[in-house]
Length: 333
Ligand code: XMP
Image 1 (tube, rainbow, N blue to C red):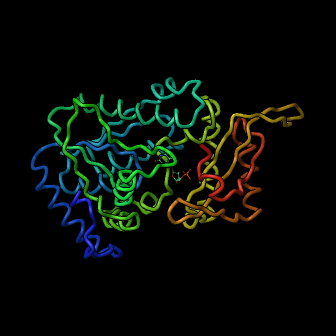
Image 2 (image 1 turned 135 degrees about the horizontal axis):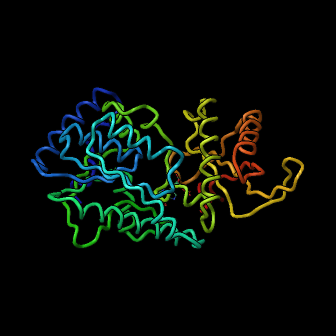
């Protein structure tokens, strides 16, 4: 636990120069720790795992083996972008696994949110473990653990209860024993971003909004179906595009679409058209423990509504969720 505590003397990384010094120090530390051995990393494309990947590519190049598991619950083009950036631009040793069918088959008919989370978390570990077993001579596992994760585990160890079960790659099966490489475990999120930019990662990736591990799985409410998941992904892509055009992506903390498993009656081409509603949620927070609602200009809401109802098959209404946290949580599940 000792080296899991941030020293009081550790300066906050707020500038490129401080980030460069941190990177240099960690590159040396990682090289000293792993020597010429291989390191495995589950690369989700989130800020933390991406920064760890970029840092380790700098430190040990192709000794790092990245595995990107597409669980079929990613946002539109997300997996493609991870492969493009890391394999094609950063020349990473990257294994891409499309496990969509494995996940969606297991989730078929499952409507309980915590059950869905458990299935996704467990299957994620299994897919990752299957890939790890195929590789030879890997002794280390890198993780994008950051300081709030450490603080959270300390809290849990003290007996406080978590509201929702978040997952990472911890808990690999017994036959896979790795030593851990956690180069950003003493950093807060804002520092991880400064380090990411100093490593040359794109601004949009480093400042992207948080995305839950179970992905669109907890936004396609109730039992997931492929057609509703597809509608959710398309509607979410429109929301993100319009927020980016309006530069709201730079100020709003988290914004996404939720599609519940209910249909209402509508009209299209003069015929009855039953469809799902797309619910937009846009929240601001500092720590995700409480959140307020972003005031979106009406004109933009009209535009998004118009686009989603015309461009997305199966959606016939758009709603805006005005509920703060508490009483709602940020996600619907
Ligand atoms: P809630 O819904 O609990 O969300 O108010 C707070 C923040 O946590 C994210 N979230 C998750 N992240 N796995 C994750 O990695 C999860 O299962 C999960 N559930 C919620 C949520 O997106 C928000 O940023």
